[in-house]
Image (cartoon, rainbow, N blue to C red; front, side, top):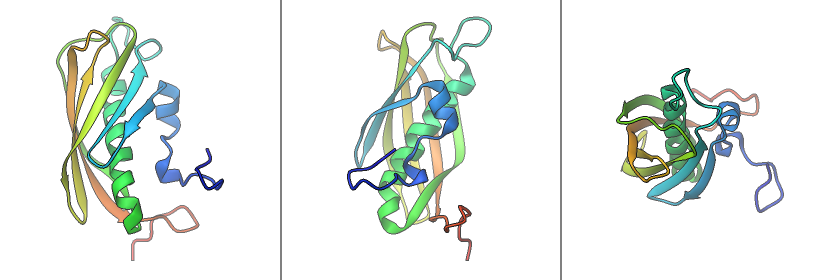
Length: 146
């Protein structure tokens, strides 16, 4: 993935292997909110409903990507520390859309709330993600914990 300056996109801005396998796509991202979609097909559990783990991954992917948008200019990356998901109704077809909103941005943590909607714009799940802000990884790929 390339950014506008023709240099590789830093890994903390990529969505990651699992998000790519699930078909998660970021639609919009700004300082206070973000939006993403994910197909239901290919992410169902045996009963035909969207798998709860896929919903959790959508929530964490969107919120952590939004957090990184905010903390990267400060020399930090945001990593998920606490994820809560409440499933309200099943999604069975089409795509789900997640909308993330910044609740709190501190020096060492951030908190996002996320709502997930089906194609009929009915709320299917809600969640929160608390992120820890840590120093950007050194060249080795490991976080600098000094």
